[in-house]
Length: 373
Image (cartoon, rainbow, N blue to C red):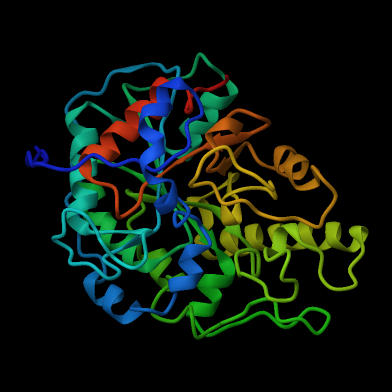
């Protein structure tokens, strides 16, 4: 039986804007810190301590998978979704709270305590196929107290470091892969488009940080499955337009709307093709993690959702996502169940154990993870 988290004294802290009265008490204290919690922060700290992060997360060893003796299946009103990014990047693996320069990193001990809490409360993970079946049919029966774990960007420190912890609780997780990051980690970068570099920092910022294709394949299939986050260039922070920085939501210099639409389809389609070729049946094509947290929204309803400027026609990317994917993961609770968008709770290093528990409870009570609003 997995160990339960040790009882310890912590200082509650909050950092999100409320999306309902249930979230109000959890939101106000940490707006400033919340602004750090964005998918783009990863790129800003990429390369700070990649060697140290990789050393703290050695290659996976043979796993002992915990198997629950009995799991009850039932209908579920809500399925909480958690998202993680990095592990031990600037903090000791034993740190109960990861107080690093990069807020997106958790420590091994921190992650283990969070998973132990979920286990102690009777939560069971679901696969992406189970989650999508539940979205399509409210009568779908899932393991009791279901939840979904996701990991963004394909960062090796988290994927390899989280694997033995997940296995110890019999948990599964979904890694969202940026195919350009995996290519870059292996030394391969996409050519320029129209004279514009669309992969700034490749391969320098990828090496020793992002998982290579071989490392992704080495992850235990009993724990990890994969979905698309971005293709060759979708999650690189661009520098060709200071007012619009994300490849999927911004027109290239001189690009027409029609040309953009062809490019977007090629970017996402190319990512899906690469995933299928490299990772095969472990890929679920129905899920998409939106790069940079959203779909070009100029504002977000809570502090940890990253506003993303867009120069494409309003609503185009939202409608494209709705038409092509069954589960489109964003980080704005107010948008849950709009189209196929699904909210995820972004778990970060500055979160104490008490904060993690209270945030999860508040979002759940507010209906942020419900199948429909």
